[in-house]
Image (cartoon, rainbow, N blue to C red):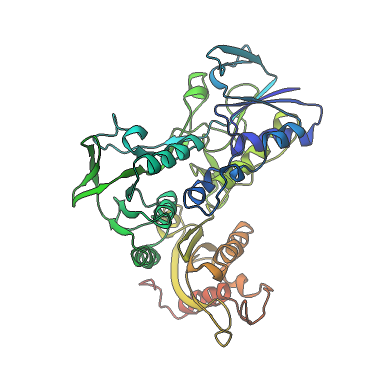
Length: 460
């Protein structure tokens, strides 16, 4: 079995490793467009901040580790053409030439590309001008070069999603004065405004100039300094970082005739099969099955890419694996706070045909009599008719185990638990770490109490 994998990030590496694990006789070759296979793009902000001083430590595995696992790496080989009839892929080589490789099965893991908004100036400004995107190791090195060469003391970050928040913290930690601009009316649009507001205030307390409800229309330079013009004024900066989301990188597969699906991503089934013969696809270039919605969505997440890649790799060499689907579970650390969420919020739940009710609660992360207890703010969403747990959002201190608590909800949702079921969970308890009724249970009990009292017409 000759398995060819296009892509050396989460999905591609997972596919290759899973294929070799399932069939150790398979010949697995990976085409990696750059020199950095299996590097954690999610870890980039922490190298920029200095928390991870050595960039090589961002590698999940070294190239030697991957080779020891039986993967044949072709670094700096960028795939340019897929011929599904001939079962070949053509790629450029480091010396500027081309090579054509045969395959029996193919996994496409081309990932995503930065989704750039219509900002005047972006079409001709780039890293040499101090204007950056951040989606690869090369992008990270370009940012670090700008910071050094421009002796940067200020930065403007456009986009207040996960990467925008993490980079605002990273650049502030480096000593820069950071302005964070967001077009929507709140930071971190994936959580409710009631939790986003204290998160924005926390950023301000750490010196970040947060401006949401602000539309950027121009980035300009006089050759030495930069300015970002918005509908609410202008913001100078030594560097500008545009992190406004991603779009699936599908040109290669689309040109070969692969059927596209949600948000223009590659259409795959739950075995990660694409529409082309003997071709599988996984990661940020494909749409994904959502286990709660029971439909396909575009949800680019590193954790999802790893799992999809594993399914694709197993099936490509003759296995029979099925992708269970994500819930969109995410967490982000912003200075001393952590925000997290899983499942559906009201609007998505209502659109899916549920009758959602969301109730807000605040509970201590551990027993209040033990020192340093901190509040955890929770918002629980359940279905009014059935009581089914649909989603949860949390905000709390970094030491309050926010990520693990949201994982409790994610696990419960995955197995169709009701809100009431959470109260029956046998969760651990010791006063320095929790309470006899954990914060996750206090929140769901409050949801049940308010629903039964008829107090949910206007949500809490």
